[in-house]
View 1 (cartoon, rainbow, N blue to C red):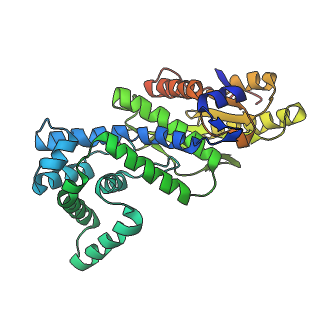
View 2 (view 1 turned 180 degrees about the vertical axis):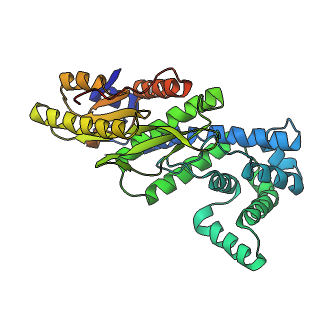
View 3 (view 1 turned 60 degrees about the vertical axis):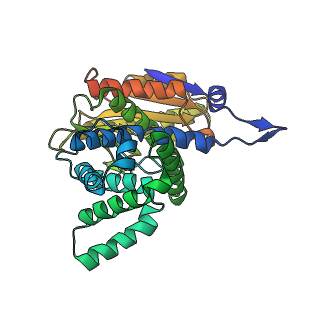
Length: 346
């Protein structure tokens, strides 16, 4: 199915704020809040892990505020040393790149109590590791436990609403430090939202034991795929991938449209020749692109999100486009759709 987003729809959904002809909109904040909300499943998982470890029905906030250091340490350790870290929710940076589970735990608990965990706290942890000759994970758990119990009276709350504000701030900071790849960031964020939306509802990844979003582009033959998702079995083997090439063009229609389609078909052919089990979700950002070319592509890819915009106008997925991507990911994870086969003569 093809979903096309028109320029007017994008502007309406992004709710531009114009006063006396001056646009004062803060669209980056809208994007960051959407991304921050996807950290809620990780917060909920930590809360559940604390409750199970301590045999308590108290909220994460109440546990962190009132429990003794020994019990908080035990619960943090359970989060770090979970027996099987497949099938767990993500934590991620400002451009939607997911952290490894151990790093996710470190950042999450650091964000609760300390600023700049990478730039300021991590060097201190390194010094303790060296001085005490202890494993890094053990030192991280001890440091985080100590900081939480020492400063929790000053912090006063560890509610999701408070932590969400911290997450937004941290995401903005990490996004500022990462240059370029703006279009990849938009798509990666939308894909992460779709995956987390599924996890938040089902508390798993459907027919897969886990998923992971690749940190950067991957190449197959001579073609590149800007964003990709690995769908894993219970031993972390890749069963299939969701490959997402992003195609943007400033030019409009005509022969450019045909050349554009040829580029996309080349990417499809390379992917299908590599692994017929992989899914192709194509993101197209181009003004006035040929409907005939679009219809042709719809017969060979698994999902298309087409934005009738110039690349400079492409800043986010609106609600309709996001819901369409959510639905595609849900169908893949539920096993209700199979990847299209390569058409002869493509």
